[in-house]
Length: 177
Image (tube, rainbow, N blue to C red; front, side, top):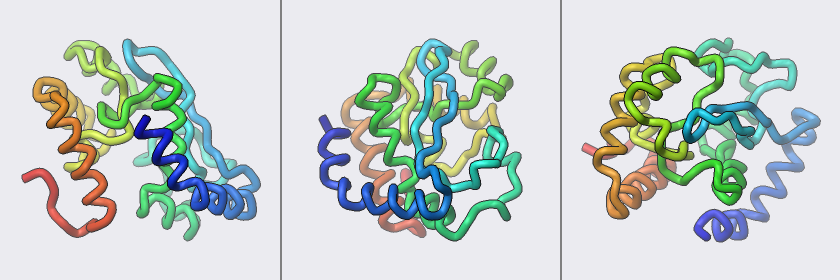
């Protein structure tokens, strides 16, 4: 229900982003295979922030010079993530959970399989995002995923969600001490 509400509230902004994305990239949406709950592959929706010709690899393996000024804006504002609310509505993701990885990220997949992280639905945000730990550090990401799973409750879920919103609004503020 939260996803429907956010999409409705943001619909004027989303229409604008679709129009701008169409002018910059011709194709404003980016669809990519990701690994979700129980290790099942699904298609994630995002706003495109890189040229169409960019290979489908983890972000840390890309030359960041390829990111256009429009793409930088989308990533900094986290608006590139908003289409993932459709994945939440489709039941493939949750608002809070471990970030879904690419099928090619075998190190993180093995760690998540052995630690039980795949029992959770992937999320748009989670502890790894709040602590700025990226997928290029699989051990650290999975440690935070496991910590998040062990502490998960309605209150903790809401705390992560509200801290994420706060971090977007006040990016220089330290979150979750």
